[in-house]
Image (cartoon, rainbow, N blue to C red; front, side, top):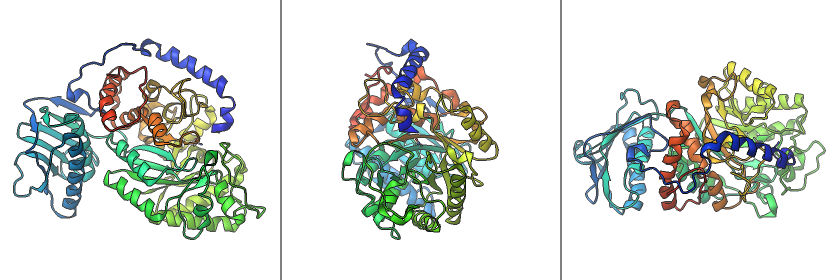
Amino acid sequence: MRVLRRTLGTLLVLGAAVSCTAAHGDDAKPRGERPAALAPYERLLPAPASARAAGPGYAFGAGTVIRTGLADGAAADEVRQVGELLAEQLRGPSGLPLPVVDAADDKDADGIRLRLDEDAAGLGREGYRLETAASGVTLTARTPAGLFHAGQTLRQLVPLSGPGTVPGGTVTDAPRFAYRGAMLDIARHFFTVEQVKRYVDQLAQYKVNALHLHLTDDQGWRIAIDAWPRLAEYGGGSEVGGGPGGYWTKEDYRELVAYAGARYVDVVPEIDMPGHVNAAQASYAELNCDGKARERYTGIKVGFSSLCVGKERTYEFVDEVLGELARLTPGRYLHIGGDEALSTPAADYAAFMDRAQKTVGRYGKTVVAWHQLATARPAKGAVLQYWGHDRTAAADKAAVAAAAKAGHPVILSPADRLYLDMKYDRATKPGLAWAGYVPVQRAYAWNPGSYLPGVAESSVLGVEAPLWTETIGTRGDLEYMAFPRVLGLSELGWSPASALDWTSYRQRLSAQGPRLDAQDITFYRAPDVPWS
Ligand code: ACM
């Protein structure tokens, strides 16, 4: 109901702004405040489970070598790739050569050592230990993913540029939630694979591990489907505001999936159904109950389109589209939308979602859908993505709680906390405000483990920050809306609940400013953060 509610925007926004000021008034405007001088292990973001500075540091310099090869078999190749990628990431800022060598025979030699230890206790599937002493930095994990995350922590411990000292100490770390996602809507405005790769790099360094791609909507269909070629060729040729749109070939999609995979980011593709389908209905007359193709659409209304639930051809479409997408996607999840189907009667909606969910299962994938599926019949194991907000009806929240109690995992994306397209405040140029303004503190200062009444932390698969692009069509605007709020998402998803603290977070966030600048990320210098 994004845009329907937007018509109430001004009133709601005023309400939200007042309540934000009341809630966050104390330190909302640290005018002239200087950032705290944090020690390197205190600056880490997301805050690790534990970090302790001790002993002498390691001289990271011209002689530093990255040592892999401390594992056998298939894993050895993957660790080598993690090492190569870490070397590439460290070379740019440091200007050092950082050769990657196979250290099997030389496992105690100086350098940055990547060590796979399947028996390492307490690290889980993605955790790691990072130990720094004069003789080097040792990264230990049970999986290559853990080594990758360790490397991203190391990037925050080396100097911003050039050689220098990695301070002595130990980080032992593992995530709070398995799913730490960001969503990008490439349907309302088209974004290229290169643009999305850049976003993946920006996210993966903060341990985000899922990229949900909203591939289809009323305004554009962005992924090539062999059995239905006009979806992309015709339905891809529009976007909000009348621009040219575009679409990804299967090769483009595979390239992005591989790029994200090398950074331990799983792609979760979404085909939004049974609403949000005007681009498909413009491409194929047979997808309409009246057999007439729709006009392409470039506005920002929602809720006016629906697949023809009573027609068998609709299910051939669903089967072929989801089948092709499942074959392209190594990750376990297929997202089938299910939100704002305002033109689909409730019984039709439930009947349609039953069949779409079965199709996902037949292709060996797990369903993700927006939380409206809770009011129909979520299939066994289906994941619900909650996008409500403080004013969402209690009955809708209760339906999600009941589904969680019945065993459905929940991804939390509260619109008035994690929607990256909500304006920061009245002065923000891009973005919408139907869920209220979302300043940086509001995005960060809440607890996913106790957020939804009746949804226990054990039912929370994780958190995701969606970025809808009705008003966002450039890399600059994308980054400005995502940064710095997406760092809050990273910490909410990764750090232990005991580490979540706005007062300390805003200092740590400020310490990331020079890193964001060094990566040429356009970010919003939020007034509630003491940027240096
Ligand atoms: C949504 O914002 N309609 C999921």
